[in-house]
Image (cartoon, rainbow, N blue to C red; front, side, top):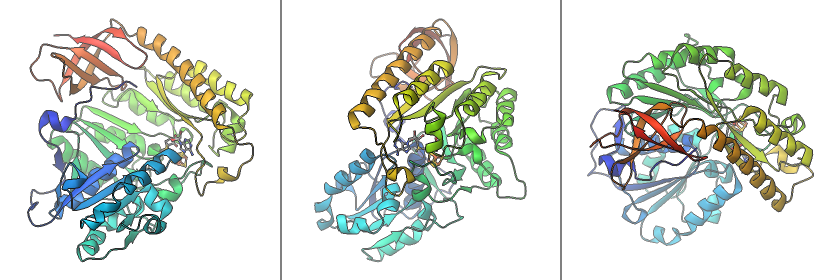
Length: 464
Ligand code: SAM
Ligand code: SF4
């Protein structure tokens, strides 16, 4: 997927928005906090909720660690590089504690490293995994009381993280976690250890928040979960995931409903039927395959074969309207032979994904694949990654060129420094940079005719 213009929305709009809470924040009484987030959309959204907890306790968010009394890192450990980045960042803050600053580590690295973080970085005072976020107010209270070693590391929970207030960064598109944790057991993945067991949020609570969001002016909601389509409503209503999609789309003011990430094994025909019957549900499914080889999929414990995955793809492609499909792929999993890798390349030829995220396999602590034989050398992983990305580039070049001269509706999300240049994205989540003479377009929906294409992005002009 392409990159939109890189001007922050806050700078464009002069504000970020808070939702779901009465306006009773005192910013004068308590301290200041700085929060940096690493990782995926779920981490971004967790940070929005953590910020909401702090704002409702009277804290004030600042833009630099130097200006903050409380410095928090919401971390990611899905691949080794992400975890390393967090420790190098923590190293930069060794001196800050002596200046009286409180430093906290949240998220996956916190959960994975636990109290060892206090040994490795003794200047840290708070270590809290995402499964303990619901106890964050009590932990903050302990820090305020002067406690220098506060932990939240329990993963044995059936609670979801519900906040009175969420400080959302984007004023038009709202993330909303509907399912936390993961009950799958992919052999390479830290998520079941770092985020705990699967917990679905009550459907009435999700819908209440969507109504509040619509009243605040949000027109696009993105339902989040590691396996979002495994949603299991804990209320007597027992709403299915497809029903939840339809009910969210019915909320007045909502124009687009997205969901990510879907697990192929739980991708059922009723989801496609819901998409067919309700155009507000966006034309996009992110369906990670990880490998095109059934042998590798089995070693990964992915719970489907290549053939079963392709049946899901056929079901989506047979829908009454075109639905974009994107995926995640790991190259260089232990034991992946050249033939296995070729099967992944042939899967790309068969599916012709709209775009994909690709990763070199990264051995992670506590995961079954860590002990697997036949590790692939780093240079070979890099070679396979480059070959895969080149193939996908060719596929996207052909795909995108076919879009020239077509007209799409965009939600405008960015404004370029260049005059009359804007960016937005289609329902299928393709970024389009376009020209328009309009004075103000941010947050509105416009029709744009495509005039040019690159593998990662489209160029166009507004149709007026
Ligand atoms: N829950 C989602 C799913 O099942 O597809 C994705 C979770 S993960 C945050 C996002 C992607 O990171 C995965 O789809 C996978 O491709 C990649 N990933 C996870 N663990 C990895 C590892 N150990 N090495 C390399 N990539 C990894
Ligand atoms: Fe990790 Fe697999 Fe769960 Fe996705 S489904 S979060 S890859 S264990």
